[in-house]
Image 1 (tube, helix red, strand yellow):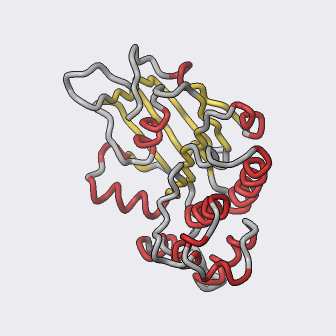
Image 2: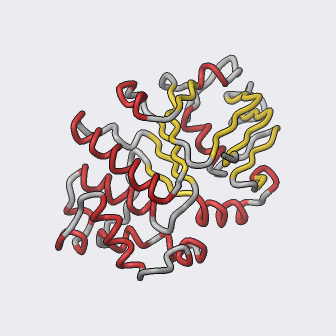
Image 3: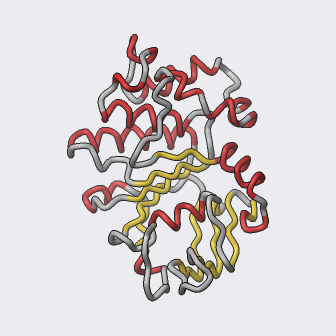
Length: 233
């Protein structure tokens, strides 16, 4: 199994005058893996995800995702790479309130020709309906504005949007923090099924240690980050 993500000698700080808050000599993640990233609040988990997602660049070191050296790309190139290859699920779901459920889900394909082309055997709407159905959202609700949905339903819409167009990588940052235990487990299992179906790698950050055993591997930030003082922004 080949590596999807490779980090080497990464150092990152928010200001040049500050010591690094991320200092990782080496990190590799293989294609198709489900990875649980653990760490205390303020340990740099979200910062690490922003580096892997190409949102921020390290001051030194190299980051390769799907054989693309992100540290060598300009802002516009990284934006396009992200749109083509990475789906995000946030703690705050960032759904577009004035769009319907199905329009929110199909949105990535209007920013990425590659993800639109990945859907070859059906229309965008049919693929969105399939994803929503697999995530247990069916019927007239998928044509309603997302503001009419419960928190748990909005979470599943955010997951369907991230999975739309078969991205190689899903980055999920505390996506289950607002759910109770039963709904959390259901959501995780459904997300796993879709990632397995699409052979998508999953990076999942959570404070909830009870979820850890469900994943292939756990990365403890305290074990890999050599920065003396870390603060998450």
